Image (tube, rainbow over all chains, first blue to last red; front, side, top):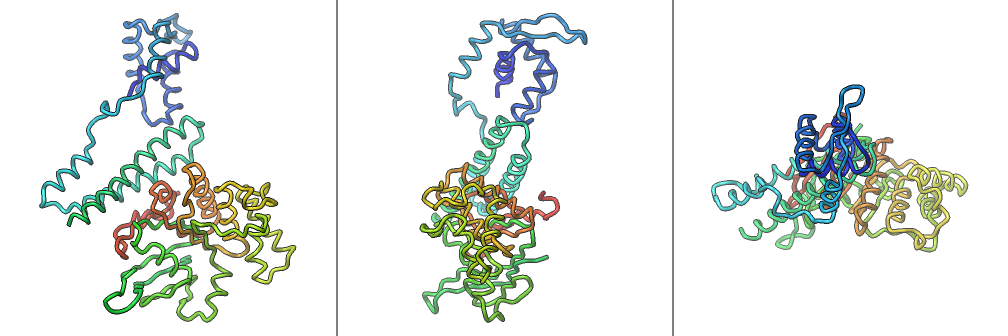
Length: 169
Length: 230
């Protein structure tokens, strides 16, 4: 997940200081990915090194306001116009666990599936409650929707595994 | 308060070698204000369970209670169903020659309620689900989602506080489907009871409790207590 590009997108709306960036980042992603202020400043200083942002003057509370540069805008445009590659995602522990359980013969795969399905459904219920309670606008709801679709896909895949394994037996 | 209770229910279709054991020893309680989802693949017994809960079918053994009344002892099952239970199915069955409000009024008129009052009740429930503006439209002038919402209004008009929904999101896209669940959830929060059969995890997730059926038996349940589910 790219904090760098998220911050560039926020800075494209106007100059901001680190704390402001953190608050707005969390608001637009529904606090799904909490950022600590240290991450924000580390990222800002790397982006400054790469010429994507420029620090300005400190405000009355001593906070440095950052502005996006032309190179920063170009980088942000490139990010928005490039699709995310599937293989960039980390390995999925559940997939590995299930493959091992099936290959292992001495594990009750049905039980692994059943436990996981109930746990995933609980997570899905929590996400749905969060979505019902979501008040910070459409960006937040769509982030939660993304997680709902992912949990749903996992649930469907588990049902599929169960059906296939039942036939194989 | 328990609205529906299934106690050790078995349902066998057919006899002898061709007998199909649709439900095996299923026990389930659904309380007032609760939304319970039943999930399972086709043939797992979901629809049989729903039909038994609503008195559309009788168990081979075990008992079904509706508001603490054993359905086995009820003579006028049709009357009890009509007064207390509302149904919503995937293939909605609105009458195409009647407007939305006339469809919603219909069960009340069958109950013997007079026209004016039936109309008031129908408008009230349409208003509660945000469909008052559509009252005068015919089914083919409504979207698929709106038609299903009218079916929900009809299922809950008057005194009915129990709604049995069999794949109510059927052919709807996810946005319209979410809206159906938002309405069902809202009705539960207002005191109604919903037993929902679905094979779609995203809709089951709106429930307080999700029950997984496999081969006629309850394989698992999320069992979230009502209080912490809100």
